[in-house]
Image (cartoon, rainbow, N blue to C red; front, top):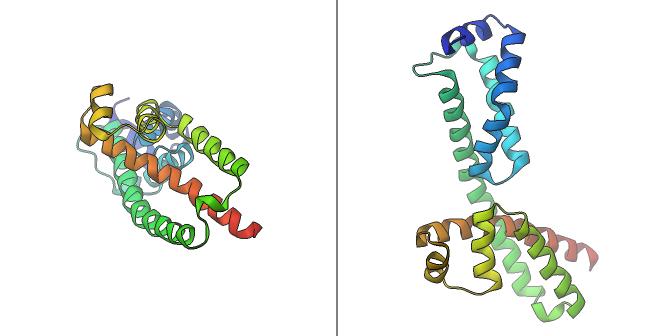
Length: 187
């Protein structure tokens, strides 16, 4: 079946054809979305939303290229929308947490064993990053390399280093927010 035939069957609400399309593309679309979001759960949500939209709005869809390309474009656009929203949300949350930490949680406030535990948790989070982000984050945060040194070491551009570090900081920011909330509850 070509794209137009598949879409026509979906427009007729043929569950079997829709399910075959879903089963055939779901995993690769999740991997694609994860390349933007770096979060498997969010990536799965995006792909499921795209397929739900395809099912619900199939009568309004007119595909110029092929269905596979159309679905990839939908996933990419939804990922971009999420990244735009996350940037605004996380920047404000991280700023709040940094303010709270500056006011009441200086590093000296934590006992040495808790500092070590926090450091280990950060390393665990970094170890779960995608390979390129993990390598860049370790060189920057663990080995204290400069941007240009990381770029030279890994044979990537400085902009790639900055982008990967920005994404890593967002992921680490979630951990910082969690820990700050945890410590504020404990006190």
